[in-house]
Image (cartoon, rainbow, N blue to C red):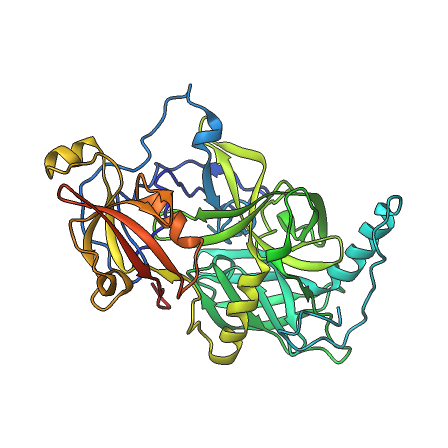
Length: 422
C-alpha cells in the first residue's frame, strides 16, 4: 500500500558499496514521483497524472526544493554501509538496573555542567547496531528502552539483516535478535540478553511538550565513530516528512540542526534534562548541488516510540497505528486534469475511489468529489491533504469542503484509524 504523504520530489541516494573506501559517496538518482497517492485505508490506483511538485530549474528557491533523503542503514546519513558491496523512562518500559546519572537543573550559568551531565546519563543507553545482509555489512545506532534488553532503532537499519549484534557503551558485544518492525514509522525493536551488570535504560520524554529553539543533543555512531555527541536546537516541529516512494512517512517529525551523519540513524535525540525525545532518522539534500543540506535533519518523536514500542515488544508487530485515516484514494487536480475530466475547479484532491465502510464512505463522500478544504485548511493537492490528515487523530470529527459537479458541499467526517501495514 502507498502512504498518503509522499513528497513527490523525494529521492533516495545510496552510498557506493566498496571494500576500500571508508566514507560513503553519494550516487544521485532520478526523482521519484507519486502522482497518484492513496490516503489511509485505500489501495493506490493507477494514474498518468504528472507529479504534484514539478521539477524546478536551478534558479528556483532552494528552500522550496529541498528533498528529504532517508538515512538508510545501507545508504547515506545515519545508517552506513561498508564491506562487500536512567531509572525513569516515562513509565512505558521497565527500568534498567545499570548505573544511573542525574542531571542538575539548568540555570543561567551552568549550561556546560548540564550538558556534561546529560551526556553522562544518556550515552550508556546508546548502542551500536551492526547487521549483516546479502549486500555486506551495515551499522547504525540504537537506544535501550527496556531493562529486559529491548532496543529501539530504525527499521531501515535492520532491514534485510541476516544476523546482527549490538555493542554496548562499555564495548561489550552481544548477539541481537529482531523482535519486530513498524515499517510505516521506520521503527524496529531488537533484543539482547542483558549482561549480569544490567543495562542503563533511556528516559523517555514527552515530545509533545517540545519548543522550537530548545537545545538538544544527538548521540550515536556516525561513520562508525562510537558514542559521538553533536548539539543543536529544535528547528521546527510538526513536520510530515517522507522517505520517498514506497518508504515510510513520519508524522509530526522533529527538525533539528544537530549534525546527523552516517551511523547516527536509530540513535538518540535528547533534551537538556536527559530525556529521549526523538530517534534521528532523516536528513535533507540540496537538489541543486546534490549535497547534504547543512543542519536540516529529522527525528521520529519519542511519543511515537512510546505508542508503537510496547506493541512490538508484546506481539512483534503494531496492531493500533494511532494514525487518522480518511479512507479514500486521491489524485492531484491541476489545469490539465480539470480540462480532461471537465472539473469546475483546477486545484484540490480528486477522490478516485472510496474505501467501503471507511470514514469517507460513512460520511457520504463520493468518487469524483474534489476536496478543496480540510478542517479549514486549503487543499491544493494530495500532499496538502495528507499533511492536514496527519495533524489529526482517529476519532476526530472534521469538516471537509468538496466540489461535486458544480455544487460546493461541506461534509462532517469522523476520521478512522489507519490499519497496520498500510
